[in-house]
Length: 395
Image 1 (tube, one colour):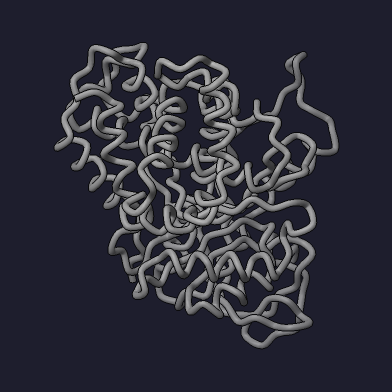
Image 2 (cartoon, rainbow, N blue to C red):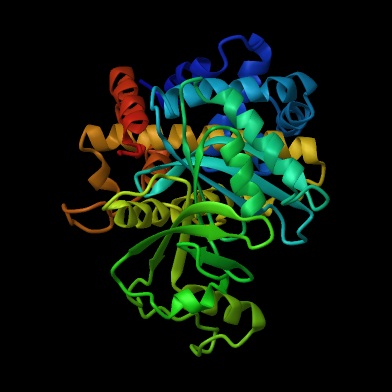
C-alpha cells in the first residue's frame, strides 16, 4: 500500500466530520510535509503531488492556512487526535512548555505533549504573541481547553520546567490534576514548619541520591507540596564556539549555571517511601518535549519550521497543526517499519542493539522510499503501540 493511501485513511480518523474538499487539501499539505517539504507556504505548495501548476498549488496551501472553518475545527482535530495518543490512560504524564516560533520573538508556542520513544507526541498546542505569553490567564485557559480534549476520567500529571511558577501549579490543582515542576531562584521554602529560607540553602545538601521532603514554597502565599532534592552526575558537556573554546556570552553562562544547579522538584503527588526516585524519573522525561520542538523546527533533520516567515497568528496556528499531524504520521510510519523489522535498512551502520534512529527520522526515510511495502494492518498496530507507549503514573 502506498504511503499516500495510508495517510488518507489515517487522517480520516482525526477528521471524521470535515468537509471532503477541505480534508483533501489538508491531506495534500500533510503529504507534502511528510515527503520532505519544509514548513513554509511555498515549499508545501511546491511539494504537493498533482497535475496543477506550482502557482495554483501554492495558492491552495495559502487558502488552507486562511480557512476560517479549519480554524474552528482545529480543537476538534486535537480532540480526535487525543483518542489515538492518550487513549484510555487514567494518569498519563503530560509535558508542557513554551517555545519561540521565530527569531524575532514575536510569536510563541505553548504545547502539551506525551513522551513517547525518546520523543513527544503533541496533545494540544496554542500560538501566542508576546502580549499573552506566560500570563496566568493564558495558562488557565490553556488548561481548560486541555481538559476538554482529554477523557473525562483522565487525571494527568503535568510536568513543567522552572519557567512555570506557583500560579501555574495552582491552576493545575484547580483542574483536579497533579503537577511536577522545578523550583529555582528567586524562591523560598519551609520544611516541617521551620523558618523560611532561600532554596540555595537546600542546594548544599544535594547528592546523587534523591531526597524527599514535605514542605511549602512561595513565602507570601504558601503552597504545600512535596520537595525532592537531586543533583545528577556531571556529564562533562561544554558548549563551544566556532574556535572550539567554551562560550563566554551571558546567554551561555545562564544555561551553564542552570545545568550545574541541583534539581529542586516540587510536586503535588502524595509522599511515599520511593516517591523521590519516581519524581526524578518523571522530571527526566521533560526533555522529550524539547526533542519534539527540534523535530518541528530543525532545518536539517526536522520539518524546517524555522524557514517560515508567517506573521499572522491564526495562519501560524494552522501551520503548526499541519506539522503536528505530519509528525504524528511520521511516528506511525517509523513504528510500522520497526514492527516489520525494516528500520535498520536506513541506518548508516549495522548495529542491531538499541535505537540508532528516531521514529520521526525513520518515518521520513520510509516516506521517501518508493520501494517499501506497507500494510494498513501494520500501521494500525503501530498506532496502538504509540498509544500504549506513553508512560503512566503508577502509585
